[in-house]
Structures are given as structure tokens and as C-alpha cells.
Length: 313
Image 1 (cartoon, helix red, strand yellow):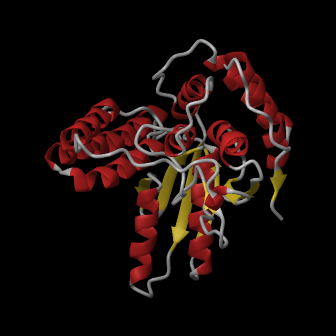
Image 2: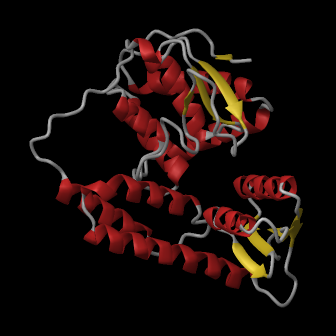
């Protein structure tokens, strides 16, 4: 059976001149294919639909026209051919990353890690070269590491700057966002409040912190999910957190790095929470109970639980 695809059809005004360049760069950043003239293609996924909806909104606000539809190709174009085009594009990205990593210095490491994260997010069909790109970045990090550099102090739970803050993340929370919000409440900011925003909205109010989202203060770094990054940045080494970090990593990144036998079961429970509740504050409440129980199963002395999470108005 033919699979569904998202089609975005645009009419961009000829003036101002920079407008076409701006929209073209935006489309390149979300990894879509150009089918013909101004017809663009992405797989029918929730995150891809959000990306196309944002582009369509931007084009309309600038005086253009945009039509977004879900389509199936019955003849003239094969799903397998389209998937291969996506894989080819990402394989080229991985190859370019690996090549640049092999000739770069320490000043390029952070930028290349961010670029790898961006490419992996657009790798919808498992392109070749991902492992090679990661390996090249790991070699760059090892090659440029300062052997005698003192460790940077991690921000601690007791630091006033992380007490009673509002933490912002993308709406529709799932694995990494659920786990990271729980981690923030239990080990970083027991008085935390949470605000859930559309995926394309990275703007924050004064005093807020973003996690697991574009331009977030705490988000994916290299091949680590946000939960792992939070554990490292805050120096969290409590019993049981390593187990949870490995489970969350494999569920979120889908790279089977740790292959714990519990991972599939935890994933089904998280999927059930997401499906059973329409609102993110309810999902977070249920997820906190789940991760509390999982931690108790691994840790001999679980921490005292903080109050139930509250959502910022």
C-alpha cells in the first residue's frame, strides 16, 4: 500500500528579492525534497507537519500562498525512490561532516556537533554514514582535548539561579521531554514550573529556561539526549540515573546504543501516557509517577519527592 506524504505547494511573491532566498533556506533547514518548481515533500510525521505548517504560515504572512496536503503516489513516482532520495541527501551531509571533522581544530567541535544533531533530526529513513560522522567527531574531540585542563564545575541543585524557574519546552511531550522535566523537578529545581509551546516557538520570557527544543539552554549535544545533557551539566550521579539515561537515550535517539532489555517496556508505558492524556501537564504528572517508580526499582535510597508539577500561566 502506498504510504502517505506531506506536500507543500507555495507561491512566493517576487518582491522583495530576499524573500525567496529566506524561504529556500528555511525549507533546506527542515530537510524536504523539491519535487517540481515550488512543490515540496516530507514524510507524513507529526514533527514534519509542524515544520511545513510553520513555513506555510510564514509565507502567507509575507503575502504569498501556501497549500499543505497529505497525498499518496499511485503511479509515476515510487515510495522507495523518494525514500532513497532522502537517504542520499543525508548521506552526503554525514560525509561532509566527517570530512570537515577530520581537518578541523577544537574551535569547530561545538559547531560540528550542533550540525550533526541537525542532520540526525532530518534522517527520516536511516541514511548511511551516521556512525562514521559520529566517530569522526569523537576522534576530533579526543585529538583536541586539553589533557591537563581542570574540570568545569557543574551547576548544582542549590544554585539560586536554578531555583523556582519556569522551564519551557515543546508541546506534545514524549520520552525525552517527560524524563527531563521529571529530572528537573526531582534533582535540579523542585519548585519548577513548566510552559509548553509550539515547536517553532523558541522565544522565552525573562528568567525562563528552555530544554529539549531549538536554541534551548539544555538540549541535545552530539549523540546525547537532553536527559543525558542535564545529568552531565548538573553533575547528577545518583543511583539509578544512569539506568534511566540509557533507556531514555535509546528510546529518543533510536540508535540501540545501550540495548537494555527494559527499554521497550518503558517505551510502551510512555506511549500509553501520551495517548491517554490530551494535556501536557497531565502527561507530566503521570510521567513523574512512572519515573519515580523506575528510580525506586534501581536506586536503594530514592530522593524525597518534590510537590506535583505546576504549569505556568
